[in-house]
Image 1 (tube, one colour):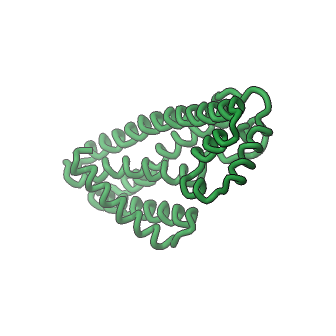
Image 2 (cartoon, one colour):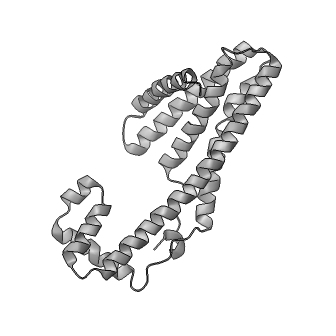
Image 3 (tube, helix red, strand yellow):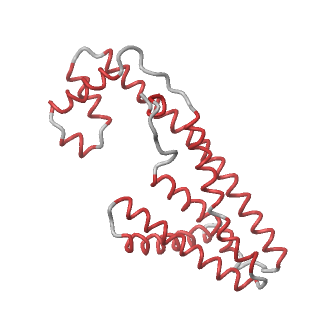
Length: 221
C-alpha cells in the first residue's frame, strides 16, 4: 500500500530527483545564455534570449511534470500487477521468482530462498484481498508541481546578472560563474547523498556539465 494511503509522511521528491531536476533546468538555461557569446549581444537580443530561455524551461518543466505522473502511475500499476500475480500463484517457487525479479540484481542474487519466501509471505499478508488500485493522489500532484518548479526556478539565478549588470559581456561572464557554482553545489549534494566525496562529486559535475553544455550548443541545442 502507498505510504500516502497509510497516512505516514513521505518526501514530495527524493533528493536525487530534486537535484537532477535542478541540473536539467540549469543546463537548459545555460544553453541559451551560452549562445549569447556567439550571437549579437545588444540589449534587445539579450532580452529576447532570456525570455526564450524562461519559455523553454517552462515548457520542459511542464513536460517533466507530466512524465513524473505517468511514471508514478506506471510503477503503481506494475506493483498492483505483481501483487495480483502473487495472490493467484499457488507455487511458492513461482512467487519467489516474481519477488526476485523486482529486486536489484545484486540483492536478488544475495538473498537466499528462505529470504525470498519471507518477502513473499510478508507481501501476501500486507495485501490480503484485492490489491489497491493504481491512482494518482494529491501527493503525486505535489511531486509533479515540485518537478515543474525546480526546472523553471533553476533559470532565475542565471538571469540575475543580466538584471544587475548593464554591459552584456560582464553579465554573461557573471552568469556563467553562477552556473558553474550551481553545478558544483549540485555535484556536491549528489556525492553526499550517495556517500561519495563531495569535492570530487562537485568538480566532476562541473567538468561534465560544462562539456555537455558545449556539446549541446555544438549540436544546435
